[in-house]
Amino acid sequence: MFSSEVIRSIAAAARGARLEPATLLAIAHVESAGKPFAIVGGRPEPIIRFEGHYFDRRLTGAKRVQARAAGLASPKAGEVANPRTQAARWQLLARAEEIDRKAARESVSWGIGQVMGAHWAWLGYASVDALVEAARSGVEGQVTLMLRYVEKAGLLPALKRRDWKTFAKGYNGPQYAKYAYDRKMAAAYTRYAAANDGEDTAQETPGSRRLARGMRGTHVLELQRLLIRAGALISADGIFGPLTEQALRSFQQHNGLAIDGIAGPETMSALRRHKQIAQPPGVWARFLSAFAAWLGRE
Image: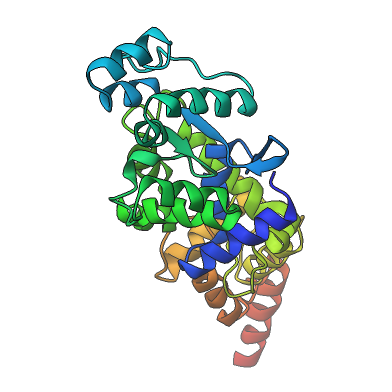
């Protein structure tokens, strides 16, 4: 997981975009493998990935011939392998820049969101160099770059409703399922939403917290107690398991709420307003009540 400092930066950007912080943290974590930067040449640099087929398309004539001969360009995606270390990847980029600086930078996916440099104009940057400088400025610049792409690609609605398949298809392309991007994002979301009961990941207020299956802690315990008060036959153990989800969905269905099995602000508010359901009397109590009524008729 990211460090507390990185989490705070991403959470702040998420709140500015009216996003649940854990959703943006999940995307950033999957795209960057939880590493917002690498130390290259003694300074922190954004993580990068060089795409040789992008470079090939951006070159013509002698430059393309030179790049292919140097093993830096190919018409086939994946043909130019990325070195294992980030330091070596930056060296590869430097070699490509010697052939064509602009084309080389456009052929790299930059930073925590792995956004291609080729999108610089579409995302509103003055040049590819401006995009690169934003990515190199720190975590905040990288997150801003990622958010620009999410917004421009029309993926904010999918992210807000945690529709990971739709988001992954739009963000990672049609082969998202092959690499399980949607499942990885869902798993990362659960981890970040659950960490320290959600307090460290997002610095959330009670009104913004969302509880989902797989989470645990004091907030889940409160949810379970409210569900029990509303008549659910579950135990209050602080673990959001399948029975808690089933009880939550039932409550949502009977109270006109979105049936998503997630305890967000609206559902929690409805639970807190809900009056305690009186438990039905047992057999002995019903017998005594009936007997008393019979005596009253005598």
